Amino acid sequence: KGLRIADKGYLNTAVMRSEITYIDGEAGILRYRGYPIEQLALHSNHLETAYLLLYGSLPTKYQATLFEEEVLHHGVVHSDAEQFFRSFRYDAHPMAMLTSAFAYLGSYYAEANPSLQGQTLYTKGSPESLAIMDKQILRLIGKATTLAAMAYRVRQGRDFVTPPTGLSYTGSFLYQMDHLGQENYVPNPVLERALDVLFLLHADHELNASSTTVLQTGSSLVDPYSAIAAGCASLYGPLHGGANEAVIRMLISIGKPENVPAFLEAVKRREKVLSGFGHRVYKTSDPRSFIVRKTADEVFKVTGRDELLETAMALHDAAMKDEYFTSRKLAPNVDFWSGLIYRAMGFPLDFFPVLFAVPRVVGWLAHWRQMMLQDGGVKIWRPRQIYVGEGKREYVPVDQRV
Ligand code: CMC
Image (cartoon, rainbow, N blue to C red):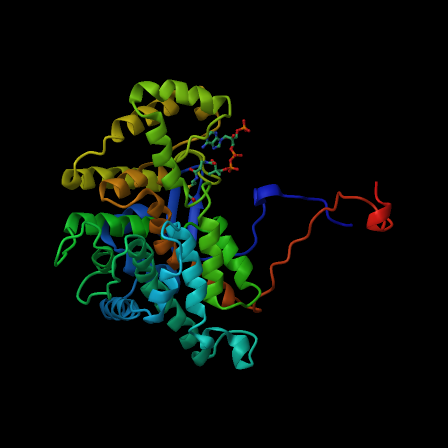
């Protein structure tokens, strides 16, 4: 009654005001707190950008150093977490492990849950509240890489690695992964920087499905670990963070460039999806995809060209010329090229969504923090529906049903 719109997929519903990320989908523009993504990718790094997203301005040198130190300091997780990771099946998907691990982490920090302290909410303007909130933010960003590396190593039956000191955020992550298995592993600076740029590009993207999920979940005033776990679950799907994995599976299934036309015909018959193409907001181009494409060339100089690159380029070029895709304004998104980089760097295929989730923790937390501190407090997100089911019916006992 009184409800007239069922906006399936929220195509035209703005649920809040935000100062974090600006997207112009027609012009292909993405800005974090006003800074063009191209400038940040060129000059900034993931942790500096994380500070920007969370707190609204670029940090001073002192603030940047302190923030980095604090995040890296919080990289260590309780040794009990080792048991937790070892309880998974040997072939568990790393996103299933990471999602669970975020929720598990929350069980360690009672102070993150205001209702356990007899309060209902983080109180705006209260320095104690803010300090508690920001502590959880540091913990979650710091521990995200450690949990991800643990999810990786447990499947290989390898011991876990304590986060090192003296390395950058992505350097420490690569160290903990030690994915090439060398002794005294020192990350290759080109790969470390490439991963950092990819992290920065994935740090936020306004109210995508997972960020919305974090806010929806957080609106019940649950602790941030649970809200981040919910966001992580949402990101797992192939229409969202799982797309980078889906792109590589698609390219493997296509095989050689000469098979591209037949694949595109199958997409047009709606038998297949062109993964890594299309976006809810971008209707001309995704500015991140150009930066990822450039980064891929840097990485390939170190790792050698991925054999799927030719197929990816053939697919890209053919789709961009095809009326079916151009008329629907379908262009490559951030996931089209990123999987090729991860593959070249040696990450296993099902780990790709983890490489999206870890940096996105920053955006999730920026949105969560903004919502918790908004004027007037948090309002629980409780949408309505338009009921189209049966009218009133009388209950029939089971032995009388036909
Ligand atoms: N392949 C084939 N057709 C497509 C694709 C695609 N990848 N994307 C959209 N279309 C078609 C769709 O069938 C529809 O056609 P029609 O109007 O004839 O029914 C038209 O284009 C409009 O698309 P839509 O489904 O209304 O678009 P949406 O905004 O609901 O969906 C999307 C956006 C990203 C879910 C979708 O484009 C998609 O499934 N892409 C592939 C998965 C992917 O790459 N996801 C990563 C997104 S970017 C990173 C992230 O944020 O996670």
